[in-house]
Length: 173
Image (cartoon, rainbow, N blue to C red; front, side):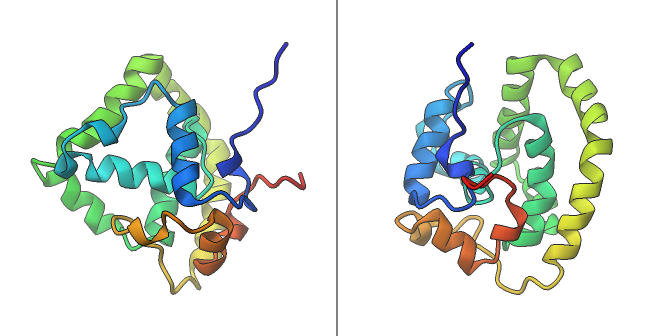
């Protein structure tokens, strides 16, 4: 049996640039909608979400997908109120729906909701620990305005915004 190696961007000490990590993300997640092929105003939230996967070292499994939302609220300048506003925005709402439909297309409705119910009890303790770890966070990474970070290494970004303690996987593991 061939074991797939973990993407480099998941490694908390990755020296890939954010741009390289994003390219790797799209290469291995070929079944998701690539926002770079959509109109910019529509793709903005999808791209920011994908960048967040890379910056925070989160995979696309359901566990990490569920963890990603609160983690992004607590570590980026995109807060819960911003999320609620994007859900109401007629230009952005369809982009959010694409993420949902990609999950449905990939796994099915029953899988989606059953996996959420199965994962939440396992995830809750980690989310609480992350919440405590992020309470002292004062410098938030830019959720939408990440362009200045694209040429910087993930390790440098994670150090600057104190994200390393929140990322599990290390090449040392």
